[in-house]
Length: 140
Image 1 (cartoon, rainbow, N blue to C red):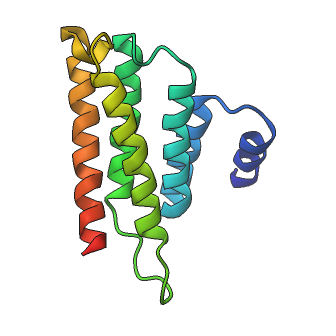
Image 2: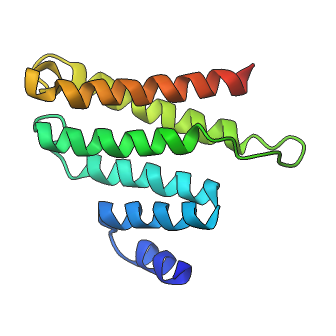
C-alpha cells in the first residue's frame, strides 16, 4: 500500500484527498515524520485549489485539515540522534504556513472576516496557537 501511495503522489498532480489518505496511512504505521509531511501537503493542495479565502465551505475544509496537521505536529517525534532538529523544523514549517493562511483569511473582504467564515477562521487560529505552543516548547 505504501508503495502505491508513493507512486501515486510522485507521478501525478495529487488531489488533496490523496494527501489526506497518505497522512492517515503513515500515521497508522507510526511513521509520524511522513504523516506530518502528508498533512502539510494536504493543506497546501487545498490552498492551491483556490477560493478557500472567499468561500466559507472551502475555508472550513482547509481549517479542518490544518487542525489535523497541528495535532500531528504537537505529538513529539521521540528522541533522535544528537543534533537532529527535524521535529523543530517540521513544526516551524507548519507554523509559518498556518500563520500565512490565517493572516490572509482574516483580511478585510476575505470570507474569514464575515459571519459565515468565522468558524473556519477560529479553527485556523486554534491550529496556529497549538503549533506555536509546540514550537515554543521545542525552542526552550
